[in-house]
Length: 399
Ligand code: ACO
Image 1 (cartoon, rainbow, N blue to C red):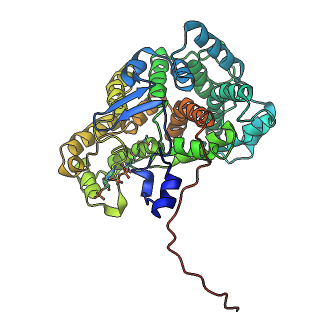
Image 2 (image 1 turned 180 degrees about the horizontal axis):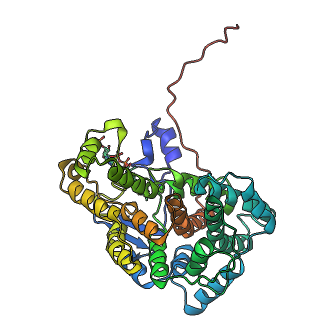
Image 3 (image 1 turned 30 degrees about the vertical axis):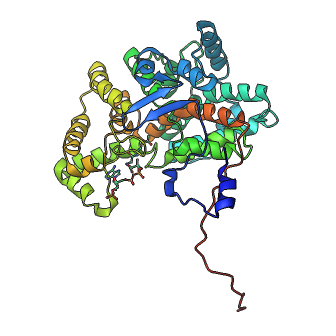
């Protein structure tokens, strides 16, 4: 096999591929997607089976270590994660330096960068013990930092993690519990959140994972690479779409313009308005995750006793779009973000926390890809080429 660098030298050609539509940057054994058929598998297991039968940590193990864990392995993994949830007390002061209006995604990525300063000297990407420990630290502490970003935004005190609770229940308590009051997570909410997190755990070379890999290819540790991934996820064309969907639905409802008129504006590309939560670079068919989220949206809202007209609005939008030539010819279907926001809202999360929930979901995938990159002997620093279009050489004229 000949590599691209040699090919470029031999042929004198460089491929120009905006958005990497046709360029593979790596081989990977983690996730399989068939975008035409709407298939998603983690390490060979269909997403539908994992979402139904598995837990977030079980799938995290699968993604990171390659096989499903035994009961003992999962028990030990869970125990280790529970023991690493505490955040250094000094790091909590970091939150007070930020305005309460700060977006929780900015707070989270900064907090992960800040977290790395506590583990300098213990973050060598080539030391398997460091890597393993930081894998556990990231899985244990990201949800706590995320909950603190939430508490900060609503002006409430931070709670200590409760290590007697499962991963998801602990996270719910950190978000919705208040000091001196007992909090018991609603099991419907717990299961629904666990399911959503599983659906987000990996999605091969998406923008944030590619960012984690690019940063990781420089020899950066897990904290730095994942902090960069969180920033990439924040964009509205990527993870930020779940927040954008809810904002869009709210605006359609408040403006009174009606769904049909809104869809017309999208089709006419008025002011660049898009149907958020629709379309995907890889899926040219219904996103299998969106199918599962849509199924649970009705169920979860009913079980939580919430009636949200925004869900009806979302369904109406989907119905109109799927029967419209504009969306059909471009093969635009709902993606995972289209219905998640309505569920997160029913659970009581503010809109600005939605992408943070996505980040917690995606963390195991980022860790798995970072590991795969660092154990692949073919890995090289990521360094795209460019085609220069600027001025030819010219002499500095002086003032
Ligand atoms: N609404 C309206 N038109 C759309 C949409 C949309 N959501 N998505 C794509 N199109 C149109 C484009 O305008 C383009 O039309 P044209 O051929 O007339 O120029 C055509 O469909 C192809 O779209 P591209 O932008 O070339 O597709 P690309 O693969 O580059 O983008 C993306 C994929 C970014 C997801 C896009 O569909 C989008 O912006 N969707 C809305 C944001 C969103 O939901 N993002 C979440 C993605 S999933 C995730 O990250 C978890």
